[in-house]
Image (cartoon, rainbow, N blue to C red; front, side, top):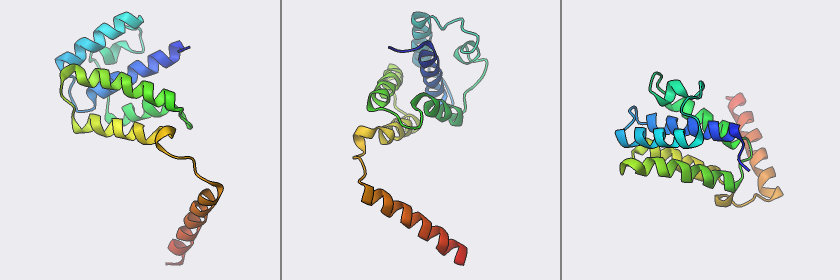
Length: 140
């Protein structure tokens, strides 16, 4: 079950994605208006300023919302749901910008299904390497 807060943060991400290339395209705007109405967010005081373009969304804010939505240990299902939602918006204007592609790529990298679980040995080796690198930096 999807909570209201998940719906709100997901919608904020979509608004951020529409802004990620610096300008909301007319098709993206239409898609967002339709989706906001469907989800009952068109008059939400938190969403309203972004949806109706009274405030822009910087890319960094969009990435913060993605982090908030996915959390520290995102599930594969949550990553896939986010990618699907973003893809629907992106393809509404039939134009995928490099910024949009980069965001999708970042989310795909966070998906645990795309990253095999690490063994204890590889986790320990990574930790030892980090400690060694810090020690070398301090020595110089």
